[in-house]
Image (cartoon, rainbow, N blue to C red; front, side, top):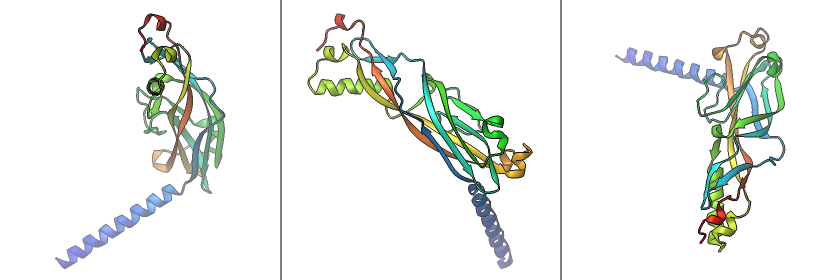
Amino acid sequence: MMQTKRKLALTTAIFATAFSVGAAQAADWIDAVSVQNNGIDVVPIEVKSNGHSYTSIKTNKHRFSFSLYAKAKSGKRIVAAALGTSNATNYFEADGSGHWTKRFNGRDVANGTLRTWQTNRQFDVPVSKINWVGQNPVERCNALLASKRAQGSSRFSILNKVQSTSAKAYFKLNAVAARKNKAKNHSWTISSSTDQSHSMQYTVSVKCLPSSTVGNKIMN
């Protein structure tokens, strides 16, 4: 009985050691990953009003500008990446129907020859596939309306003019690294690579549009 317990303890210790070493090695393949907005977002997302409140987003697509960066450890190369609007964005995972994803591989990452990959890109993202942090643009406009009403402004005076606010869109960059020889031969797979991610909140300008029917509404 004592011998059986010793064998079990030894097996558990070996497994734990192997697991921790493997996890440490994988984590060491990437030095850093970063996604940032490249410049100031000046074109606003437009929100419509029905004369009583703000109801829906008028803008179909919005252009986002990014600075993307990933650096692999010595002896490793960045072989792929994925930028998306979901917190589950991963190069190896399928896209969800309600999310937007852009994948980078091949020439996009210099065919896996770079230890440091850096690029500035712009993408037109469908507004319906943006994941908003906190309040979405419609909610932000209605929050602004409520705030101005609380300060004494009439509904008419608010909804009769363009109002400005902002919202935050979520983006995540997932980068993949592989050993130099695997990257060179294009023979890397999910099991012979490792990945690391970084997310950001991208501030977007929002324009709360006046309603064309505002004059026909009773404003209090």
